[in-house]
Amino acid sequence: MILPLFDYLELRKILRNFITEDLGTGDITSENLERGNQLVSAFIIYKSRKNGILSGIEEVKILFDMFGCDIIHTKEDGHEISPYTKVIQLRGKATDILKVERTALNLLMRMSGIATNTRTFVEIVNKIDSSIIVSATRKTAPGLRIFDKKAVMAGGGSSHRLRLDDMVLIKSNHLQVEKSITKIIPFIRKNVGSSIKIECEVKNSFEAIEAIRAGADIIMLDNFSPSNVGKTINKLRKLNLREKVKIEISGGITDGNIAEYASYKPDIISVGYLTHSSTSLDFSLRISN
Image 1 (cartoon, one colour):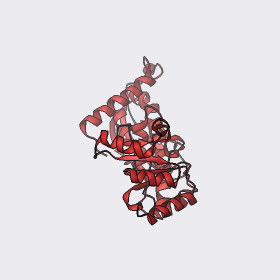
Image 2 (cartoon, one colour):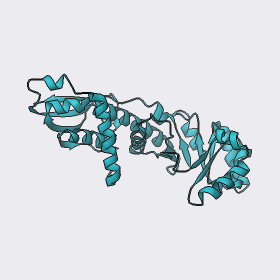
Image 3 (cartoon, one colour):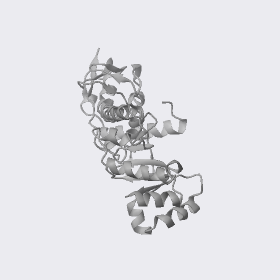
Image 4 (cartoon, one colour):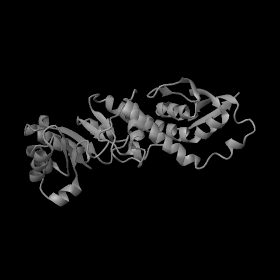
């Protein structure tokens, strides 16, 4: 993934802060090695027992580049890897490699875990309908959102909203303030214009119909059971409303039930689990002369 210059520079700035957080005033172990300044080769190897999806290589390359290390070879983000695959090889001063090691591995482990979990969900859904989008939510770790979202995309999923300014999403607490779906959607539409998408979270089929008729572009069926999703979508079809909006399903989605939800052919299935509960994969860095 090639980033625009601004985004690339911003990414380097964030990663520099990560390194600074870990280093403190310096790596007092590595900096006191007698042979710390000698050039060494190193590689990062994948150690988990099952195949995984790689994500975070771009970040790892930037981290080592900051300390003058040369990248010899890497696998690409989104690549399926098997146990004991060498995913990156590099060369640099031993001290510099050791300074970067843990930060690089932490990001690689987290991002690859998210990408791998996402790929599992995407493959289940694709067997039913490849046009259905598997999407992340904003349930990400503060400070790590862009990395979590990139990992989802490496696994074949979609970012959905990266930030609150990406689109309007009217949720239950907004409706606690404004009370009326019929009034809030036209009011917000007038304020934001026609180019901004408006999505509205609904609790039942009646609210779904109300939101569509009020002008929502997307409706989110939140915490619906699979059967209620089916009933709601069928009702919308009978009223000739299904084609007027995109339908998103969210809440309680797991790899055990996503196939049933997908069978009702929504447009989007959003899964908070991808970013808040994916298990990290296991990588280690090894130095060799």
